[in-house]
Image (cartoon, rainbow, N blue to C red; front, side, top):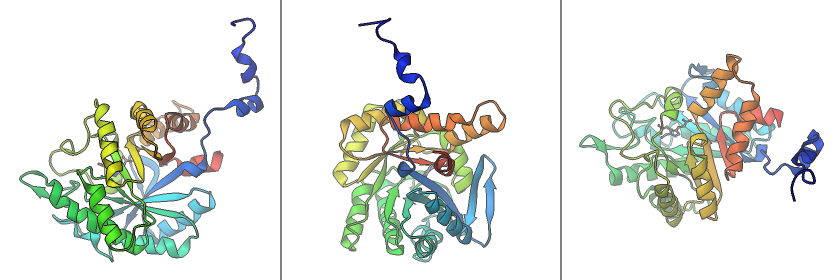
Length: 321
Ligand code: PBG
C-alpha cells in the first residue's frame, strides 16, 4: 500500500495525536543532575564556560538539592573540588573530605534524593590525572587501591550509588570487593564503562579544576573511532559487577549507546557532557538556536537507547516537561 491510501501526515495533525503516537518519552524520572562542590560558605561561582552551572559551597548545594528534589529529579551526581591537592589525592578518601561532608549534609536535608558520587582522582591530584603517576603515566593497579578507598569512604558517608569515571582496568571489581567486605553490598555501581578521550569535557575541567598538568588522558580513556572496544569494555564491567553501564559523551556517540542497549540486558546511562551543554547554551544565548534544541538533543539520547541521562539541563527539563 502506498500514497494516496497511506498518508503519514494523518498522525501528525495536532499535538494530541502526536502525543498519542510518540515513541520516545523524555521523563524527569530518567535525569541525574551533576553538581560541583567547593569549600567555603555561601559560594555560588558561575563556571565561565558553562553559563547556568555553578561551583557551590555545601550550604548552597543543600539548598540546590532541596529544589532538585522538589522538581522531581530523582538523583544528583557530586564532584568535589578540595582545597588541598597532592600526588596521591588524599582528600578523595578522607572521611572528612569535601564530598563526604556534602553527602551527609544532603542526606540530612532531603528525603528521597539519590546521592551518587563520581569516583575518580583527577580533582584531587596535583597533576590532574585520574590516578597515581609512575614513570610518567597513570599506574593502573596502584590506582585501584585508592579508588577502592574513595568509593568506600563515599559509601560510609551515606552515598546511595558510586560511579567510577577513571577508566582503570579492574576498578569495578576492586570497588565491589571493598564495598562488599565492609557490608555495603547493597550499594550499586554505575560504571563509566565506555568513556572516550573527548575534547567535549573541556568546560567540565574548568568547573572541576581537573585539567591534566601534563599530557592527556588517552592512555586510559577510549579512542573515539572505536565501536567494538565499547562492547568489550561494557562486557568486562558487567562481569566485574557493574549495575548500570554508562556511555560518555552522549550526542557524538549515539551509535554506541544503541549498540550497548542492544547487546546487554542492563540499564544504560548516557552522560550529556559539559561541551554538549556549552555548545547549545552558547548558541541559544546568541539567539542562533531556539531552546527547543535542548529537548530535541535529550530525546535523541533516549531514542538511542539510554535509560538514564546525566545532564546539566536536568532542571530546565524538569521545569518544562
Ligand atoms: C572525571 C570526570 C570527567 C567528567 C566526568 N567525570 C572529566 C574527565 O574525564 O576529564 C566529564 C563530565 C563533563 O564533561 O561534563 N574523570
